[in-house]
Length: 206
Image (cartoon, rainbow, N blue to C red; front, side):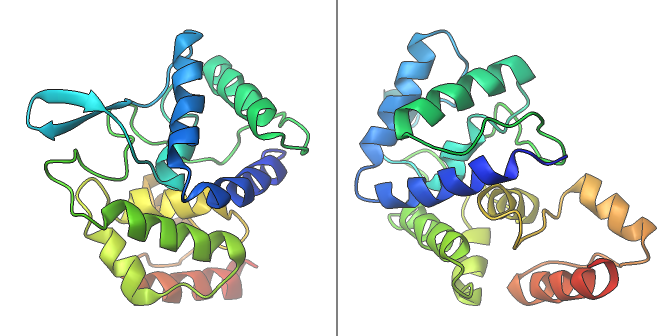
């Protein structure tokens, strides 16, 4: 069970070193697409309806390419290629159990260029770095990320879970249902209430 955890954690550690080399991450996804493997959209829009190549990406969105509602075969193909390209040493996982998935058509953690704020991608990088390095999350930064167009509580906490599954909990429909069954109320709307939930889950479930 959960044989995916080591490689996800190692990949997250490797990805955050590419903050100033985001184009290299995009090139990996382009190569996957050229092999016929489904990836996230690589087309941006600087003007509405006018397509342009994607030039920036954050760690959560990169992870979304193999954590979407696609077949397990394609998830494996994506991860095999990424493992090879980035020289990851963790064994390939035997399962993807317990991993929340993003909607295939809504995988980005930011909006098109004409709609997104100048620092949207940058603050996603900052939050990802804090999550992966073990630093205490900046509550104001978390709440700021929540307000990014295309992001919401379920999506953001899913992303944090992908990058650091031992630290965070996804607050999506499946987790919500399970926690309610364990008599843990789920009332999360911001960083403070999310932290309170994590604390209660650790106290009651370990």
